[in-house]
Length: 140
Ligand SMILES: [Zn+2]
Image (tube, rainbow, N blue to C red; front, side, top):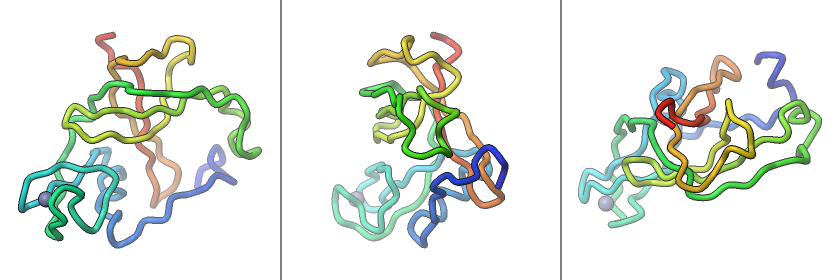
């Protein structure tokens, strides 16, 4: 764990989510695709949220998306996050369709708007955990 992330709540990969976390470690944003109906989904689940199928694979998402909603966090949930406030927590509609919640970085909160184009960036927290965050796309 790097000093900057001491005290933070670390995700705990499970059998269902391990593929996602391995992807983040390699700086690849992976989402699930149902082998029966080809539905794409995020977050990782053991069944398809469309057809309830149990055969799910991973596909490499582009990492491109748009902000569909957001809020500015001004009060840290603990001391571990105090240096990061204010920060933006957003719902991001990925270009492939699924929506994921993440933090927007490398931007001023006042510059964020619904519809803003964003792209994934990866932040290494430890040997096991790398977090997918988003930043405004270079084309904005
Ligand atoms: Zn399905």
